Length: 448
Image 1 (tube, rainbow, N blue to C red):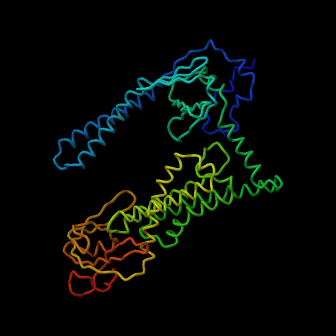
Image 2 (image 1 turned 90 degrees about the vertical axis):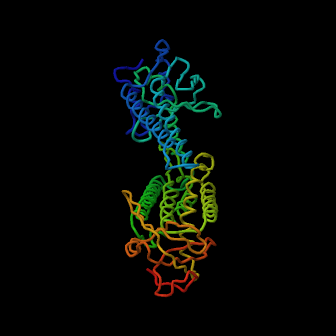
């Protein structure tokens, strides 16, 4: 019988800073089963007082806000039709989420029996036999509480999640410590896979040097994605180097994953030894889309939507093709596909404009109004233009800060309409040459 004065499982639920490989491996310690005392169970655990107050307060505020929103948009005369319906439904959803947040800390409890675990939440109850549990994982989302995941042996049975907001004791930690630690197993298995498949012909020292360089390469790739994305988002007029880097980064990430399989992956758990290159795959698309929305004006949405879907599917398909592990993560592939459609939209529209060398058709148009949109990160300047050419109603068009300052309501500007390198018509606003104010297309105006 081991000494219990300092239990080896005492820190099980507080291992945020520990190396997964150094955590307890209960499946390797045969004496734990001998120490298990069924007489300690069943035990029921409820949410701790602090977490109960936090979640109750947030739920109450969300419920109150949702109800106020429903009442306001139902009675307000400023909105009507589908816009009002959408906002009312949205507020009602938030109100329901808040109500669930109020009920959850009042009803949430976990009961541990010697041979099973039961979790009770609002509107559902789940029980899982201990014999049917394959092992445990620990999800650490960063700030906030961790989540204990019990993985069933049957892959068709849903995993059981236990939020670690409970007021627990040593018996709870000991019950959990009896389960195999799948995170720790995954560390060992992934390390063994890398040793077996990556540079098996090299000596141990040379393999270690190359692995170190490849880890630095992954760190550099993720850092470059963050740096170029920040530059593209924060700089008012980034140069072509930043744009080219944002366009190239997802494809460079795919090429790197293909070249150095199985070391690099798209996604993965933080407990294994594979390196994640999701950031350079996803992040550039978000920035390119934000820039395209503020810089490139199109006549309709169908062409950009088709381009976004085509490029997004191509990028996601290439990522899944080179990463066998990523292929099996259906939900991750779906989310990545949606995110890469943003890349298709942003990069596609920017390239559609930059590669278009055709002569523009020029329409003089009177400025009806002007306004700007500000947030904590950037400012966007808009001119409201009267109808012109194929546009039959007043429309806001984003312009540069200089054009915004030089133009006022009642002034005449020229709209340059081009067919686009990919067949998506786009236009921009520029200063007009001192010629007649005819509404017919004129020659090329004097640029800004």
